[in-house]
Length: 425
Ligand code: AMP
Ligand code: GLY
Image (cartoon, rainbow, N blue to C red; front, side, top):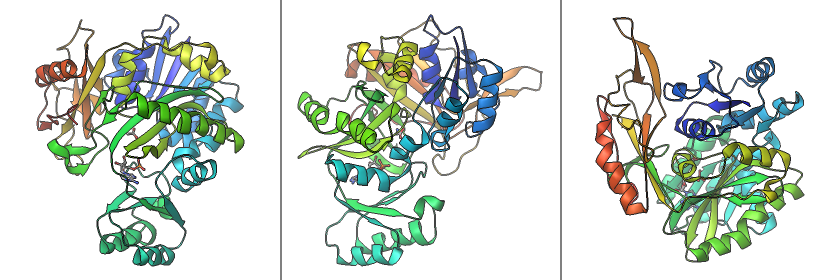
């Protein structure tokens, strides 16, 4: 098979890496890809959001299967475009990707179908939102812009003034663009946050192993929110009891609700759960693999990923047994100094071959590029805020943490930094 993966981050590197293990994958392409992905796939210089150009290219190159990694193209209807041309594609159509693309949609869906989530109100006018805040007595309060905002459209407000200012940021100053034409104000939930991703064929849902993300930039959850500074899998907080409740109250119920709404969901449905005193509650849905969760989940998958994608497209997921290793994985992200605010790019990276021949240590590239040196050679340089994910696999979480930190310093670039407490939530 000729397989195309759409995206360019650590998540897409992990997807390409796993697909490359399949005997069915004869040739893998990635658009646009990055310098690490280029060692496993032919990179195609088309932007992930250039839906029409990607479909044209897939048609011309007779691609057998396309996998969408990123959220933006899903919302832009890339799956609809590919399907309309008879191309096989893994991911939800735009009318189902809205479960991630609109907080108002997902909150209303959960309310209508009785899926546990934080209590909330929806607003289309800043004055009404402010009137609600003026009457509110309990803090923190959570403000969310309706649309996609690169994970930044959520404000946790500690007091009334912060909340009033937050409404201005989202709805008046439009700091998150059109994502802020509507908003949700919701109850603050306490607990551990766990990511449970699932494969979905429109009817059947099969969850993957659990993972947890560290979102803040620095050790001890200090500093600003980032795209994710590291992950681990499994989460020790996601106990059998929480899992049973989530199975009964959340997973299948969501898939059935989407069908009821005429928005059949196929692809990866990502449940962002808060494990509260009163059971698991949905914080958010994503319509795709998580980044950097994927980097610790896919290395634990035994089943051929091509078979899973095909079963999801064909609606035969109920007939496929998905198997996981009984082990643990940790991903430590190496970021550029200054991330997530401002940082330099273009620094050469040393040590990228440090783990060659070892199958318990991986480097997934997130923000890297090729650059020509003065003597006409090519080198790999930093090209983003999150640059690399160093992933260690071991029999359990403590062993995986130890292995990751014993090896992370073998890969370096100028001003690199990472968190020292990944996996120690
Ligand atoms: P979301 O994009 O909705 O997942 O929100 C981003 C992050 O904000 C989440 O991963 C949580 O850490 C936090 N968050 C969102 N909603 C709530 C809530 N109701 N209570 C507490 N934390 C929240
Ligand atoms: N790691 C969070 C996300 O992918 O949305």
